[in-house]
Amino acid sequence: MRILVTNDDGIHAEGLAVLEEIARKITDDVWTVAPETEQSGASHSITLADPLRMRQVSAHRYAVKGSPADCVLMAVKKILPDVPDLILSGVNRGQNIADDVTYSGTIAAAMEGTALGIRSIALSQSYGIESERTVPWEVSAAHGAGVIERLHSLNLGPEVLLNVNFPDCKPEDVEGTSVTRQGKRDQNLVMIDERTDARGRQYYWLGFKRELSNPAEGTDLKAIYSRHISVTPLHMNLTQLDAMDTLRKVLE
Image (cartoon, rainbow, N blue to C red; front, side):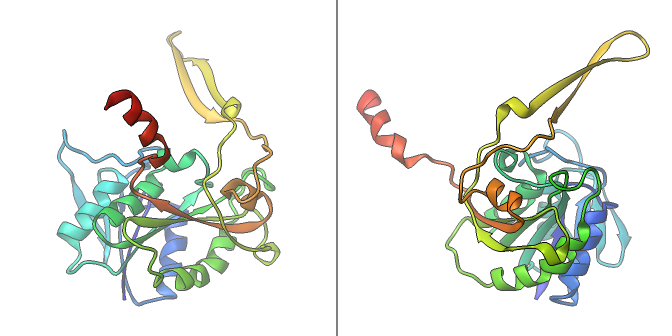
């Protein structure tokens, strides 16, 4: 089995090294194509107005000066000798749950793979829930291969990708694996930090307050808070079918 590994944190990210080791537990045929620099929050963007530049880092490892989706396209269309059997994106530094799904470059890489008809899984390691700033990579390292081996051969239908999040705890304290739905972040936790540079000009940092919410049962948020590995099936088609009849009554 050929596995393509990518991410949005960049070619030198610690989580990428973790995912490469996870992939090698499953197969010897592992290829890595990742962004040259961090692309967190890039979502499902592709580069159209600038050229893409690519360099070979080492055997079967490449860096692309572009978005995570660019990396998947370059890997499948240009770099790899054949189409991969599985695309793994991550392991992201921080959880990709709730509204993060629409921002995440990690998930976007899996979306691009799914659009190309390739089974794809996004993986993220949560932190800041029980720990402060230390990312417990040992959790995804310990549990990642087992989760992927159970998931990669499933037939979930067309245009479905999987979003896997590992909890912020010790590997031995993981309570189990939960199939979840996408939760909803408390938007009051979004913050804009206003600062002033050395020339007296204002600038801003976007971020999130590190406060725990009270998520609903069955959501990815609740699973992570409960020390469960969260597995959420996502679909490429964003159409809200329940709203279509209401719209037809007004427009047709």
